[in-house]
Length: 527
Image (cartoon, rainbow, N blue to C red):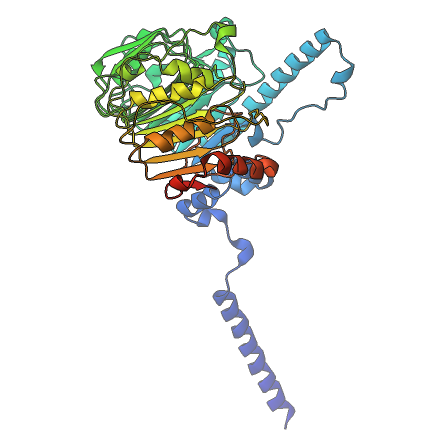
C-alpha cells in the first residue's frame, strides 16, 4: 500500500477518534462541575431532615457550600449537646480549690458556657434570617416544624432570646420549646425576678397562628391587657413558670382550641377557678403546684393527672372525665412523722364520673384513702401501685384496700403492683382471709410483686373467697414497678423487670402454699 493511502487512512482514523471523544464528553456529565444548588430545595431539605441538628452543624463547619445554601433543618433543637464546642472542664483542678474558689470557678465556667451557647445558636440562625437596613425587624423565608432552646438562661439574656422567639414566629414554627431550666441554676421564688419574661403579645393573633404546641420552662408570664390569645394553640406545658391565677385564667380562656394542658412547679398559683367553659380541653396534668382548689368546666375533659399538692378538686361537671391518675409525692415518708394531713375523703365526690383510676401510694395512704363516706359510683377499673418502703406491722393497709373496693361497688378489674424496694419477713405466719363484704362485680385481678409482705396474701384470699363473679386472678412474684420514678405500671403496658430474680422461687412457693387450693384452680394462675 502506498504512503499516500496510509496517510489518508491515519487522518480519517484521527478524525473518528476526535468525534468519539467529543461525543463522550457530551454524553458523560462533568461530575466535578456539579453544584449542590442544582438540586431542588425540597431534596436538600429532605437530606438534612434525616440528620440530627448536631450532624448538620458539623457538616456546616466542614462544607462552605452547605453553609452558603442556607438550607434549614425542619427541627431546630438547641441544647448543650448540640454543639461540640460547649464542653466542661476536667475536675482535677477543682479538687484543690477551697469552697469559695470552687463557687467562683463554677460561676465563671457557667458564664463562659452560656456565652458559647448563645454564640453557637446565633451562628446557626444568622444565615437564615435577614434584617433590612431600614428596620430592626428580623425576617426569614425559613419554615420550621419545631424550634427549641433548652439551656439555663435568664432575663439578662433577653436580647438574644427575643430575637430567637421572633425568628421562630417568622419561620412559622408549629412547635416551640423555650426551656430555660437547668441543674446548674437555682430554684425557688427568690429567683423569680431573674426569669426571662416572655412577650406573649408576639405570639398573639396572626403572628402566632401557626403555633400548635408551646412548652415554657423557668419563665415569667404575664398576659398583656390586649392579649388576644394564641389562635391555634392545642398543647400548652408550663414548667417552673411564674404566673398568677388571674393571668393563667386569661391565657387559657384566650386559647379556645386548647386540648392538652400540663402545669408543673408553677407559682404563686393558689386557686385555679375558671367559670367559663374550656370546650376543647381533654387532658389536664397538675403537679407540684400547691393549689388549694382547682375548679374547671370542661365538657370534653377525659383524662386528669394530679398529686397530693392539690387540696381540693371540683370537676363534677366534667361529664366525660373517665380516667384519673393520682401520684403521691409523700409516699416515701411516714405521715405521722411528717405531719401530712392530706385526706382522700372528698375524692369520689370530686371525680364522680371516673371509670379508670390509677393510684401510686404507700400502705398507710391506702388506709387513709378508705376514710371516704362517698362512693366511686362509675369506677370500673382500679390500678394501685404500692410502695412498701416501710414494712407494714399489721394487715390494716389491706383492710383499707378492702374498704376501697367497697367504695367502688361496680368495680370489675383490679390491678395491684408492688414496687421492688420492699422488705419481706421470712418468719412463718398464719394466713387467713380478711373479713369483708361480698363483691358481686369484680371479674379480673392481677397482682405483681407478690411476696411475704404482711397483708398481701390475706387480701388475695379475701378476693378469692368473696368476689362471687371472679373469673381470673393472676399472681406474679416478679415486681415490674421502678420506685425511682413516678411512672405507674399497668399490665397493658407490659415491661421487663430489672429485679434480682434469685428469690422468685421462694415467693412462688409462698403463693402456692397459701393460695393454691383446689377450689381456686379454675380461677387462680400463679406465674
